[in-house]
Length: 204
Image (tube, rainbow, N blue to C red; front, side, top):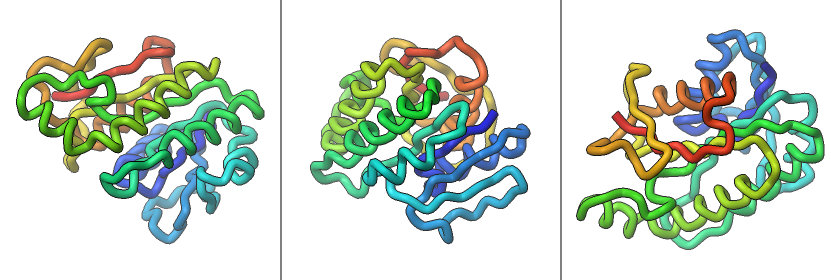
């Protein structure tokens, strides 16, 4: 499979690129700063670009089977960058008939994290969550075959492949998941049809 990864130099994006290359896929890393990408491989192509630039995103999308977005917000303030980038990526994929996309949002975009700690986390992240929600809505209304990943708190650590998934809310009692296991979910979501047009909460 030929996969373009937006936000490939971020922590989750890097994990996804490494995994996809290891599994034999061809990967295009779409990054603002190529020097930040630490991954190398014969099947890796790097394109310097900004998903806020519609034309650059459109040019990069051609010739792929699927896309992954691991883009994140810059800080906790009010922003429309995530939804703007989602609009540009959606337009790019539609233009080049790339039907499949997996998008990393965050648990909390539907106000679905329970308990006092959940409410506190959603309050702190409210601006980012609001924009991730707008981006998720853009994808879900796009006509693409989309999957939204909603991981709980992301941290570093080894891949376990033992995380839990929830189509409604978040896995009960779950508080965290590693970036490597989030990457595992994203790649497997692209390879089968189980989670097409689904928004999936992820946690241990």
